[in-house]
Every structure is written in structure tokens, then in C-alpha cells.
Length: 421
Image 1 (cartoon, rainbow, N blue to C red):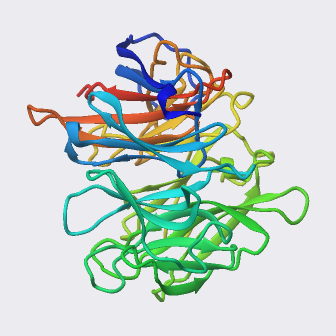
Image 2 (spheres, helix red, strand yellow):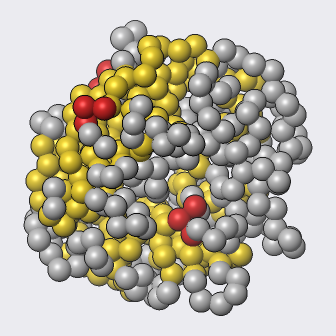
């Protein structure tokens, strides 16, 4: 892939509202609202994008719409780290990122940096122009620099994504957490690259696909780390979901269930606000955790972040369609004070590839129409951000990866219409 081949495909497209086929029944579900969206495609006619977990981020949540930035990875024969504006959509910067090792992108994970200033920065782990390690991408200055060599914080040893955690050393910047060979968690200083602390994870022979920081409301240090991982020992292989509390006395938990496909990296995990009143954020995973046999592969389930107890489970597609779900938070569509969930089901019915669920109870609230020109694989990776327009109105933007069969994958940038109240 060459940077000169990347072009902006099309101008602003209108994704017209369409009638939808009935979704799987959901208890007390209201009449389905079709959410309209303006759609813009950013992509290339000769290359593709990497839509592996953690390799695409929308930055600037809650800020001005014109300040939102998409960070992602293009890949084919070589890879580029790409930065694009969202409103309007345009690629503004790219940098050679490295190579593919046959298993995953050379950029293994991206995590926003939260610090005292408002400059958008991203942590990444991988290979940048032949150098392996941890790096900081300054989106505003459009620079990348290595944040410190370390024997553990480099590509050959980290086996999963990275995620922001808490400020452990009091310098005003949150550390990031990564997994080391599945056996321990590393908490790394984003300024120096030094490993500040470690904590046992004990996931030998498992591949971690997602990490999420689980916050405790009204408290400081003591957050948990949620993980989704594939356990390869035994037949069939299984998926593990759990939370560990590295610097807290709270008890961790983990549950195991059969994996839905032979690719463990397909498992997705999303963090929600506290729903059950125990001051701990909750988790949503693309799996059926009701304990029924056989499990329904077309469901997503929400569990308590403190205990792992099932809070709700919802069918998002016919069980014969789709292989996995991707999820992201959107705006509050039902007016209950909690941001709701957008679920993509690649390979699902074309009339409603995106299903909107109430985060509070899993009710189906609506669907989002397909952008013209999108493929059946739309939603291979998702991220979202809220942005304010010039009038101060809050708008929700969704970045949706679309690999397409012709290897010219694009990212669709969707601006959702405001909720109907």
C-alpha cells in the first residue's frame, strides 16, 4: 500500500431512512425507530484497513465536532498509521507503521492518553518504521516518538490490546495497562515507558482480545481491569470473561463459555455506566450468558462489573446470521440518562446492520440504515464519539470499518440524527 493511493471516496452521502424487517423478539421492546445518519467514506481504491481489535479510535469525545479525529491503520503489503478529520471527513496525515506478521497488525493496540492538557495523544504498541516498542502519537503536532525502551513493553511479548488505567505515580497522566504473555498485567508510565507495577493475570495458554478499565464511582485508585480472552487448551476452546482488581481488596471473578468461532480475537467487550447501584461500571460482551444449552450465538449480554452476575441478554440478529458483534456507546437515545449501545452484526440483514439497544435493560430501541455502497461486512470494527456542532448541539459520530471483498476497505463516518423525544 502506498500513501498516494489513499483518496477520499465521495462527498457527503445521505443514508435514507428505510423500513426494516422485524428484529428478534425482545421483551417490552418499543416500536423500532430507524435512526438516520449522514455518511462519509474514507478509504482507498487499492488498499485496505486493519479492523483488528483496538486498531481504530475516534478521539475527542465530548468536544467540538471539528476537533474529532479518527486514528487507524491501513494495511496490505505494508502499513500506515492514519489520522483523519471527522467533520468534515478527510485524511490529514499518515506515517509508515511497519509490517504484518501474519497474525495481526504491527500496531497491536491504541489507547487515548488523558492528561492535564487538551491535546489529543494516543499510546500505541507495535512497530513504527522498523522500531519495536511503545510510542506516543501527538495528533495535533502529527508526531510519533518512542516513550522509552523496555524489555517487556514491546511487540514480541505483549499478547493483546492496551488500555488506559489510572494515574499511579501522581504526575497527572494516566498509565496504560497491557498483558504480558497472558500471565501478568503491566502498568506502564506513558511518559517514560517504565513499567511501574505488575499484577498476576494467570491466563496461561489464553489470548487476550480486549481489555477495559472498570471504574469505581466516587473513588480514586482501585479500579479493576476487565478482560476477554480465548483459552486454547481443551476441546472445544472457550472464551474467558472476568475482572481483576490489581490494587483493591475487592474479589475478582471470571466465567468461561464456549467460543463462537475458532478466532478468539472476534470477541468484543464494552464498558457501561453503573446500572445496578453498586458503584462499579458494568460490562457488555457479544455472547449468550444465560446458561442455556446450546447457547444462542446471536446475542449480547450485560453483566455486573463487580460480581459477573447477568443483568440482561438480548438477541440482536437471527442466530443463523453473522459471526460476531462489534459494539460502541452512542448518545442517550431513550432519555434515561445513560448512553446507549450500538451493535453491528457483520453478515446480518442488510436492512438493519446496526441495532440500537438500551444500555439500562437491553431493549431494542431501533436500527441504523446502511450507507449506500457499504458491504455486508460493515461494522468489522466500531468506535464512537460525541461532538458539539457550532450551535452547541450534541451530535453522535460513529466510525464503522468495512473490509469489503475487493480489499479496498473503507471507514464509514456516520453522523447520527438526534434522538426523537
